[in-house]
Length: 188
Image 1 (cartoon, rainbow, N blue to C red):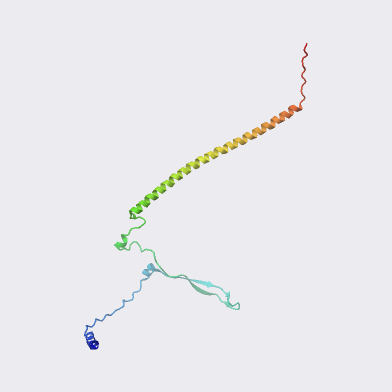
Image 2 (image 1 turned 135 degrees about the vertical axis):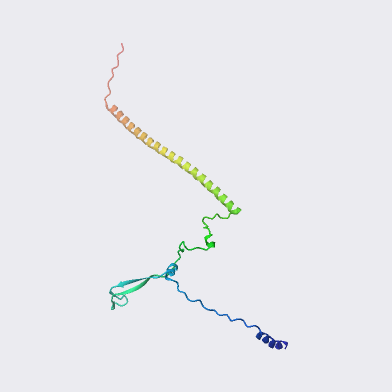
């Protein structure tokens, strides 16, 4: 009941509230970009014209089309993403940015420890590679000397085989010759 009595007072106080000012929005005048600006901001689409001679319709073999022009959009308009010419002044905040490839990274203890560990691993791998190269050189030298010895052994085997053949030929020749008779001296 008391609530019903408060309703007219609320309405009256609402009506007495100051009126808000009127806000009007006027649109900016439409400005068309100059042709020079439009080419530096956006590339236009490229349309090419082609001529086709007479041809038979692929859908209906009873139809023939007369030669005519047709137009094809070769490339659609795209934004020009190239940087502006050097003469354009860039804001100080953009000009003061540095290339992150040339900036020294912020190092903490963990990063320094990891860099030291990687450096030690790299040095160990380098030492092992040098040791492996030395061993490989020694192995190749020993392999070359072994090949030379094998060739020398092969030549010696061939010489021994030739010598054995010559000896057997001489033995057979000696066996085929008649033996000279030796006279024994008589004893008195």
